[in-house]
Amino acid sequence: MNQRLQAESLLRVFVRGQLASFYWGQFASSLIDLGLSSDESVDVRVETNASSTRLWLTPKRGSERYVAIVHFNGSKLVCVQ
Image (cartoon, rainbow, N blue to C red):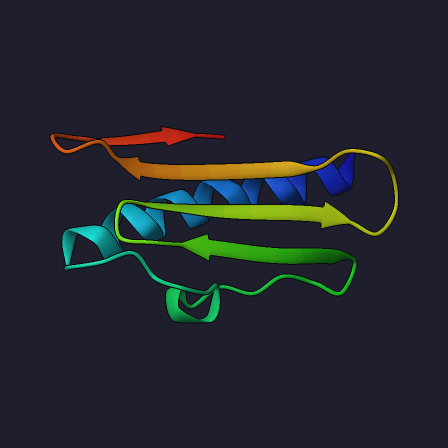
């Protein structure tokens, strides 16, 4: 349960950070660029291109995986967790 809460918190902060980053010109390409970090219990992958960014979280324990996506569809930003 604690693992899920930590993942959800990181996803929310990632989305907010990417919204701000996009406002200033482009999506950030890493957690470090957003001033974020994760603990050692989670494998983190950030995928970014000109119109979207994704954060993939894979905990080293358990079977759940987490993802947050921010996508610019040409007229507005769409966020999914």
